[in-house]
Length: 214
Image 1: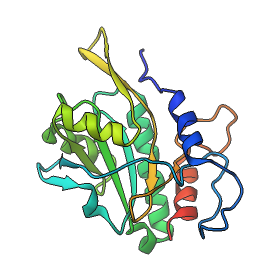
Image 2 (image 1 turned 135 degrees about the horizontal axis):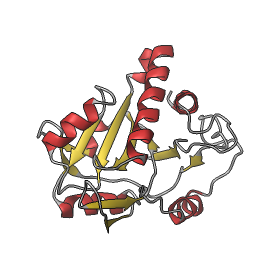
Image 3 (image 1 turned 90 degrees about the vertical axis):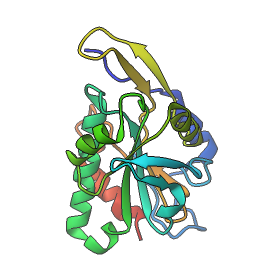
Image 4 (image 1 turned 180 degrees about the vertical axis):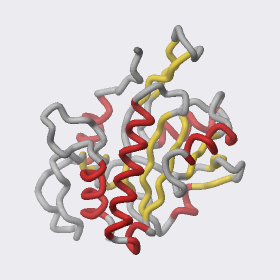
């Protein structure tokens, strides 16, 4: 089976931009990132956009001001990686909500497609509802999506495929956590570790939310 491609260079670029450190930042009250997280404070990621949600409603970045945002780019036809990542994110979010409903209410999970030609609002409505009722799915024109992806340092490319789908989309796999002002904090740990450690589990994501959401 062909897997959705992770562009390995991107986390390295983000590390350079963010000036990552495992040590606490005395200028920030947040706890230091877990080794499984990629710290992004100071990175130029994100920015204004207007897209369409799963109900056909225009949504813009500024309307989420005041909320922490989990932002994941992917697509509904993704055969394996996207649904696994989204499942872990949704489960981690629910674990966090179970332990601390008040802080979880400050978090908005967002899924942005990199395949707008197939991922219409109707398609996204069915897709995101399978993971969590609070998950917002966003789409737009190919030009709009390309501009948003560039702003969020996400790269994707169309790949020909033989099978049920005409093509796959290789894309950067980066579940970002943003603060209430829309500034990037960390990349959440969704990778499945070969060591059997907790990185990439719903518990690790819940722990990351507990570290960063105030």
